[in-house]
Each structure stands twice: as C-alpha cells, then as structure tokens.
Length: 329
Image (cartoon, rainbow, N blue to C red):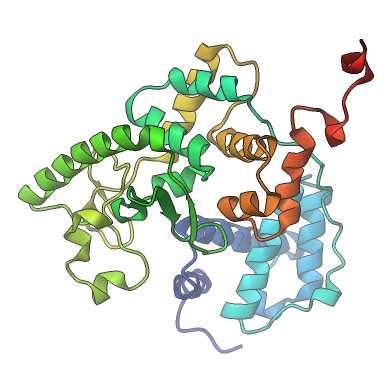
C-alpha cells in the first residue's frame, strides 16, 4: 500500500469530523483501533497496518475480547463499530457482515432501576441549586444527562411548555415536555446565566462552542445569549480542538456525584444514577396510562421494543399480574 499522507488516527479523526460524531465517540474509536493494532503486533511480533488485515483479523480480535478479556457485550459491540467505521470510511475496505464469525460476548437481560415517585422526589429534595434543577429536568422531561447538559437557551420554549432536544442519540432532534412546576426556577436560573454571560463579554470572552459549521455560517452567533448553555461551567476553559477560551457546560461527573450523594442522604436503598430519573419518567408515564408510542417519542427511542422494557417494571409486578395474596379477602 502507498504510504498515506496522514497518519491512520489523523485520518480517522477527519472522517469522524465529517460524520459529526461526538468527541467521546472519537476517543472510543481511536482507542479500539489502537488496541486492534497492538493485539496483532503482540500476536505476530511485527507491526501490521490495518490495511494489510481484514475480517479474519477482526474476528480474532473480537473473540479475544470476549474470551480472554471477558468484556461486556456492549464493549465488544463498540469495538466492532470502531473497526467497521475504520474499514468503511478510512481504509475504503468495507467489512462483510456475513464473514463475522467471532465469539460474541453474552448480553445479560437486566431490568432498569426505577424509583417510585416519592423516592424520586425524595432524592431531588436532597439536591441544591443547579444540581436540583438538572435532576428535575431529567425526571420531569425524561432526557439523558448529556442531553440535559447540552441544552442551550434557545431550546427552552416556555410559551408552549416544551424542550427541543438537539442531536440526541442517533443525531435526531425531538420534542419533550417542560414541567410547569420548574418554569419559575428555570427562568430565575437563566437570569443568573445571562449575568454570567454579560460578564464574560465585558471581559473579552463570551463565545460558546457551535456544532458543525455554524460558527462559519453565523460568525456572531457564538456571542449571542440564546446559543449559550443552560447549565454553564463555573469557570472558563480552553477548547482542546480550537484553543479558544470558552465557557463549556457543566461536566457530567458533577451531576453524577451530586445525585449519588443525594440518594445516600435520602435513605433510598437503590443504586441511583442520573439515568435512573429517565427510567422513572418512562415507567411513571406508563403507570399513568399514557400510550407507549407517546412515551417512545418523548424518550426518542428508535424502536418501541426498547420502550417496552418499562412495561416489565410497573408497580403491579411482572407482566402486570396481581399477587393472589393481595387479592385475598
């Protein structure tokens, strides 16, 4: 093969940027490409470019992950997705699905952790300030933690009481409801965020990261308040890609730690993470009698089968069967 003009991982970076994948996806894909190369280097004793390998080597690597490293099914699938992307978009040598013969990691069937309404409110009451408002949005709107953190001011529609979730999972936009009870708190919070933004502008900063090519299309948009994050970080930081000093959104670990601490203080004896609020949102809507298709749209699930898992965790037990003990007179 002729030597490429760029290193392999640089080419991978370029293709991921073209496809508008997230920085997290890029980190994960780059990691698995490196692991793939290192695995075959250790096995053969020599460096082999992925362009010199193919489906046989991919099968060996995936089997190694399942058998030797005993990774979870989701981890093995992520590694496979990374290699499919590499061969299809970077090396222009698409892998053939029918040749996939690797030992697959088993995927255990687990039901999601769900809080009762009183438990959810109990955990939320032990949160303070911005963390409490974010938890209320996750539980009241059913959106993921990163979807919450990436909300921008323009995504909140107070008049119609809905939130636009931009670039959700699968790069799709969707609408979800905005609970009336949190509107006053949210407006008060935005007033503080606007003051922070005006201070940044006065000090020569105030720009925000804009996705895709919007920064070139709308050069002044990055300074506008409507494009600012609803939950900005306390401090400005350097953008690792552009080098610009900006105020990014709050880091997800801040929310995760706060929710875990609140759950512990509340005495709720369940493994509570921010995502549990989303599970609880879906389950409680189904309990209230809302149509599963409606819940599917609010959650942004591509397949209704994904939403149907919540029908197994409703209050009335497995398959909504009522225990004979509860039926006894």
